[in-house]
Length: 329
Image (cartoon, rainbow, N blue to C red):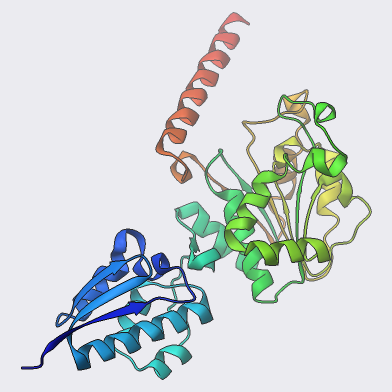
């Protein structure tokens, strides 16, 4: 019987938490795949107890896993299983396991996936349509999914730039009272778009993209007069566009361009709700070939569980007010 030894392995070059998985799910999988070893992890240090040969094999597998992560930017249960049943060469040359719901791998290997039926539908429609409308309630993931599709297209070099835009309509606030120049006034309003990009592109690379124009974030007014070629363009908060504004935006489409328009018709901040051009544009274009429409609903809400109930409560309030108004008329 081989004598047991103790070996401390240092995880270098990657956040050890990415290798261990959420709630140590991948670490537990490693333990199951190495039943002859006792494995204890503390931060970036793994202590392995067992026979010398088994520990050496385990150390090689861990190194292969780290190399895989550094090459592909993600770890999954399938990858862990492969790492502990393949040679280092096989693992390093094998492409990432395919997950049909994964859109893109974000920072630190975070998996950005289509999590609901309508998010999956948006992804599928984007494969065969150059213009998409995605409408639905807050928190349903329509804008986040659209941005993930744009980042994937950029990473795969299908397009040369990403352009994100919103109409500069205040949600009950006045931009004029905010400090700074126009960019500084608008940046907080455009922050949700920055937040999504920060999940998917490393900060230094995103800053470089912004500086060189590979990623552009601007108010809708800045789109006038432009022709947008080789670009993935997303118009967010489109419920706050007038019909003439959304027509102006849609006619900016150039060669090899893909447009996604997102909005929530229950959150119109225009002085008159009837001025919103989003629903008018969807109705006008619904039968045009090459245009897809996805209508998200409360079942797609992926924020805190309370958001769904908040949306439902306000919907019921609006229905009640409408019925009372009709009765009084």
